Amino acid sequence: MTIATTKTTTTTEQIKSAITPRVRSAIATYKDKVDYLEIRVEQSESTGLSFRGKHLDSVDRSFSLEGGIRACHNGGWSFVTFNGLKELNERIEEAISQAKLVGQEETQLATVEPIEDYVPEKIKRDPRSVSLQDKRKLLEAYNQILLDYDPRIQTTMASIGDRFATKIFANSTGSCIVQERLDVNGRFAAIAKDEAGIVRQGFESVHSRNDFDALVGIEDRVRGAAERAVRQLEAKSVKGGQYTVVLDPYLAGVFIHEAFGHLSEADFVYENPKMQELLTLGKPMGIEQLNVVDDATLENLPGSMKYDDEGVPGQRKYLIKNGVLTQRLHSLETAGKMQEIPTGNARAIRASYPPIVRMTNTAIEPGNTPLEQMFEGVEEGVYAVRMLGGQTNGEMFTFAAAEGYMIRDGKIAEPVSDVTLSGNVFQTLQDIDAISSDTLYTNGGCGKGGQMPLPVSVGGPHIRIRNVVVGGK
Image (cartoon, rainbow, N blue to C red; front, side):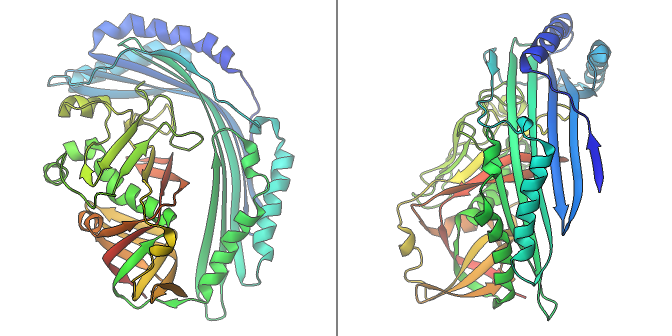
């Protein structure tokens, strides 16, 4: 077991008064030496506890201050980190020198109006007011639920954590923004094994942006992870083939995030001529009922924010509207180079990482088909539930469902295991023929460019897709 503790609490007002004037002064001193300059400072306080099997695995509490400086000159970018304000001017000079060393072309950045703002987090129950002992008791009780569910549960992984951060941003175009952010997380996993040596897993996760009580009273959700693991022990491997597949909202959300959302990130499109051709705005992508959004304005979701890490307001964007490709996700640089509008999608996991183009809350909007009709007319198909793992390679994808069920004569039938779905995302979008009227968002952690996990959420309704290649064991 590892234990690390450092206890310090500083109010946002103290941080603002101590740090913001120094950041403003530094920007004013150096802004004329490069085409663009920004400083980000983040002070945070976090706790985390985890169980592995019967044993408490770790207890951590930490307090940190970190920062990053980006400079751009003649199209050349540099990024320099720091962890103390005493070295701020020295680090800025280093960033400027490096940007001038690599810059060899015109700087192309989209322009946005300068913003001055303070964005507090509206906290209900603050996790910082809950003792480590009480957090341990809560987690231990949930872990015991997993262990006690069935003798075939071999081990568990259970954790809860919280992080409160004050983020200060200032740039050479006149913006100065202070934002608070709270993330509360719970993750629960059960691993089951039968006499034949077959191993199955079940997962559940919980997230809140404003309330520790999101982790209280979730016994049924935690138990669900063990239920899913054990239930899959009874399932037989699906027979590989081509099926009509219905995805549940969890898997539909992950599909649209992983297989399509990453292709909508403009840094990928700008650097890939083939994708520029495949992702021409105005191109038909699917049925008229298909609408895909990336929405940073939703309340209490992991990807929600008032401003991104370049000081651009978070927005609701339609990537696909009425079946037609309408927009993509941008940073200031990609918007400038592609002569499009910034979308507020420059994000970083910490101030010590540079902002890159990332999704926020990405989802398929609900359609108009009642859920009970999604299975009608399917003589033999597969109902794929939740996400176990997967990978994408450009426009190709492969996903493994956590659970699966056969669809027979329009009804959900026996459970099946080893359900993998693969195909070409553009063809798969064209093959969506029904979108249900229900919807659900779930939290996730996205990885890109060495930055993981970035808080995001994915969502959608049930969707029905024709001619999906399903692989079994």
